[in-house]
Amino acid sequence: MIEVKGLTKYYGQLAAIEDVSFFVDKGEVLGFLGPNAAGKTTTMRILTGFSPPSRGTAVVAGYDIKSDPIEVKRRVGYLPESVPLYGEMVVSKFLRYVAEVKGVGRGRRMAEVGRVMERCGLLEVSRRVCRNLSKGYRQRVGLAQALIGDPPVLILDEPTVGLDPRQIIEIRQVIKELGQDHTVLLSTHILPEVTMVCERVLIINRGRIVAQDTMANLARGTARTLEEVFIAAVAQDAAEDEGAAPVAAAAGGGSL
Image (cartoon, rainbow, N blue to C red; front, side):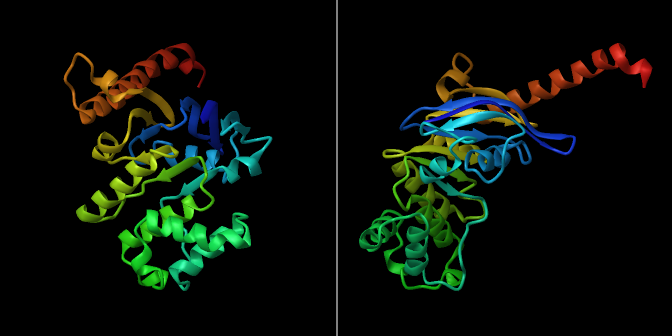
């Protein structure tokens, strides 16, 4: 459902991501791991059409992000790290507005809003103003807006950041259930989240993919935890980068 090839994004001279390639199969929940500023959000913004790549491309649900960006957006539900709510709107009216923007037919909007509110546990706050909701419920509304229109692909960026332990458990359970009907790319730096809801792991560091496999394969034969696998992958990437620096200096440093 998602195939990424050589994706690169420059901001001036800085490469936020470089030569990123990976895939997500239909019905799979993929954990997208990395330290802060590793390139996770940049990758997701490209996949959802918010930002164009400098190089490389990706195909989402059969459509190229460059040549068919509107078709891609129609098939993706996106929850950014900052939940996109209109604080002054009532929950149900906000979701009806999202349904209209996404092109859900007038005759289907009420039923669609009811479906996503039930799926995300929002029925009891359907008449509450968004700005008066707890952070946990705001995250649920964010998930609900991503589900409007029943897109086959869900891209979720740090969906449990800032939540209390009870809220984290609730949101993780919702995401796990969503994985039964959708392909999910879950970006996070919270490792237990991936252990509990994901089938496969992708680790990015300083804009480059440093490991990707099933969690079982990453730890096979070593009895390592995901935390140990993550730390080892990031440390190896840093060591390789430091090892390359003297070589580069010896080759061309004299002319600087």
